[in-house]
Length: 282
Image (cartoon, rainbow, N blue to C red; front, side, top):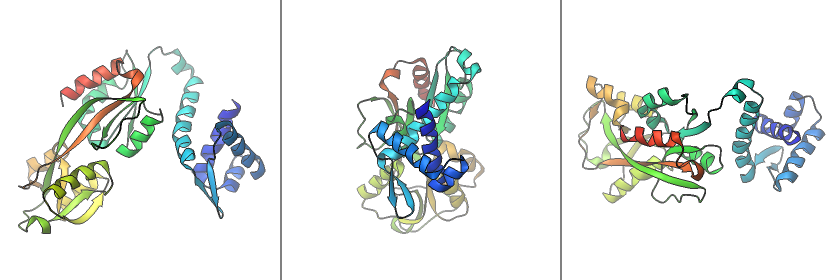
């Protein structure tokens, strides 16, 4: 119980970004709050913050503890909920990137809570999902993964799938491919790295008019005529059917790979077997 309170204070400091403000919010002295953080650091044998001037910055271990700590507090809250304690079904945490969540919509709708188990869903960028998975905050995740990604020892890769990215725009671009404005995923993202490989393979340096992590924003820019966006077909199917976006004929075919990665102890869990079956049907 003592460390739970320390953990709550740590997460509040992270949220507020300031010791004085946090101390005032929970009605303790700044000295007491500082001692609380030090006790937590002593328990974990690590530093959680670095002081730079008046600013507090999380260390690498501090950033990891934010993810782990939020999961611990969630489970602690569940332990105090009599309704949850009454349930006999296991609860699994599943993460996925936005488009696969759309493609698995019917599965998620019917399996979020069934008699065999319950699912807690997290929709986020691949980088964050992989971090949460490695730290044990997720039981399984569907992530866009580059071929160079090394699976940690505590995880298992169960299935790899391929998704085509369709070049779409609101009008025909007749310029040479090197002069066509592209709307791409942010540089450094797992999807972008796979897109860039295709450009490099064909010796093309694309003209980029916009970069984003939001496929919705990329679609909107394409609808406005800003350039060509590379988007999953299911996401823009209605736009293609209505003619508001058109599929461009390109000498390059773009695909991305995504994987189902799970904690090793859950490889044979019922929800994983159901998920594998659902993936066969999308």
